[in-house]
Length: 135
Image 1 (cartoon, rainbow, N blue to C red):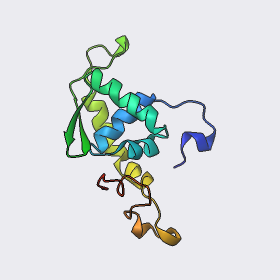
Image 2: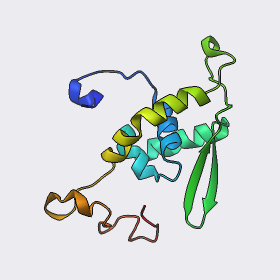
Image 3: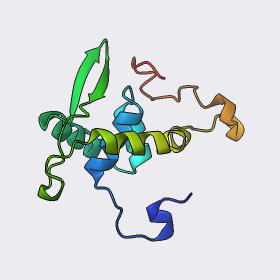
């Protein structure tokens, strides 16, 4: 499946906030750079969106060692008046389950000579070599 930029689309059905929320639901231990790669936004933009989601009560953040882990609040309500009274939980269940395989495939990096079997090896200057554990 090609991404929206590859097809020349000028918009997507979900906002950046929606894409980030779905990715956190799929992968609560994801790093900002992992989320950024999947949702096609800069790390700085993803950081700002996560801060918005935490402030609005959609996501909680727990620090364990040097890593942040996130938990989605499925009881949080949509913010638009046309979805008044509806919680995000059922929506996220559908999107998180349907795209989990696609999401994790997008974050795989080929190793030397394009060997996908070595995708977990840290690259020089990556967070894994800077003290943040890789996953």
